[in-house]
Length: 467
Image 1 (cartoon, rainbow, N blue to C red):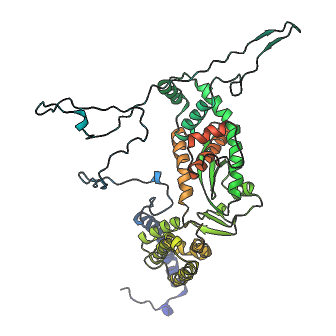
Image 2: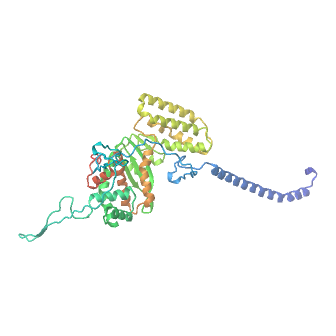
């Protein structure tokens, strides 16, 4: 320990000398303090990075990450799950077979004794199904005429209805081409090969492209009728996903009403898309995730509980056992009530709704642990009025899963084809998906509906005759 210095005994010159001797130490002290501050900042940065690394990874099960971004774990060898048991029944026999083949015994195969036919009964009955050779049905049209002996003009007969000059391929082929290309993501070259090898029909890629272009007008007419039905629905579910158009990122929107499903592809993800479609019309309830552009379009808004469940699960995995765990249990309770709505009275549902809000009040008093839990609580505090709209309205789903299911084929189409090279292709595809999704919602045959629409039959309810 350094001895104490009595400064009162020092002369002015000695004090000045002492101060000058300490100046280098002051400079080194300042440099050391600056270095300590830099190290503390670096330490805080590394601690934040370490916290991010130690935080559970986001997956499709605990976040809004799409399933394609997830990775399934490796299954151990020999750990194949047992097959689900089912009754030992075979395929149902066809109600109207084209032919019946009876095989009878002439003699017993064991003792060679005669075996009369009238004593034999069917021991085994089964179907053998084959596809007949597929070949195009070609109708050759000949329009007769000539030069009129009276006026001298050259004239020809008028073609029968449905057999007018133009493309040699009829509506059945056009419907099949549109269906295979858009519904099953078969590219032009492969589609030409399919038509040649399976159907025996030689057709070029250019002819296929022309069929798709001609299908645009009737598909858009049907989509306009679908739009009128969707915008008039009291409950609308909506979602969106990205699409590639002319090398740029666009957005495919889906709007699901009670009787129809509308798809549109637009360059924007904003509210203007919804406002342009619905105009002054306002549904009673809008069901969606918590994206800002999905809000404010209806009298009431129902938040998708599946998205919140995944967010709560992630917050719990990050260590928030105070708020997020209790909130997750509350959401599961609400979902269980939603599944039983059809068997419960209106008065019972109102009691359940009040009970859910009381439970939520107690949960909101908890203090979350960790940043994910704090963010989740802040979102719930701002949107708690939109959590349980479905409880007392049986027509409102508690998740937006139906919208995601209707967008799944479009996501697959995007991944297979890498998008659209022109805007009219995207517009035609959106109209096609509207027709197909609406047909499935009405339990109609997709191919029959396509034939119906491409024949320029587009009444106000284009699927009423096929439902």
